[in-house]
Length: 143
Image 1: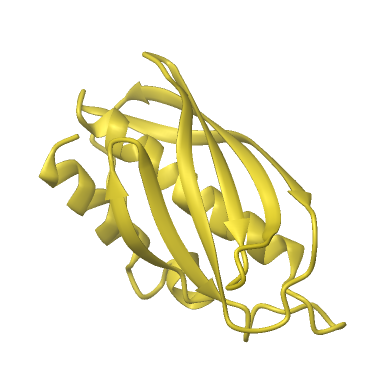
Image 2: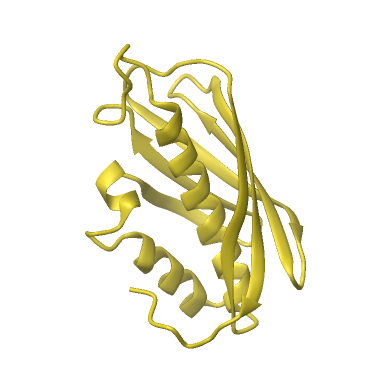
């Protein structure tokens, strides 16, 4: 994974008008084998005070998509999410949740990542899997 690919994917996710920024998502660590990000529970709750399941899905898709994009960029390609599933195990009520995306399969045309989201006590809140299609870049503007 090139430094340019890493920087470009992380920069796109951090633009002020993008959903990850609005949700408070921050990428805190990445390498070839995993990408880690955090998101505050505050501001991302459902009416009962628990972390909204959709917020967990946004965190999962953000981390998995960035990881897929970094792998694809090494070959001048782009990654587009085609399927996301989430199993919500328990609620988080405060603090930060942390998502860790790890590759399950990184291929020429498809990549899949498992994203495990945990609360500050290390308890699993959500398990997700994201599959991305890998395609040639058309040169379209991505910002």
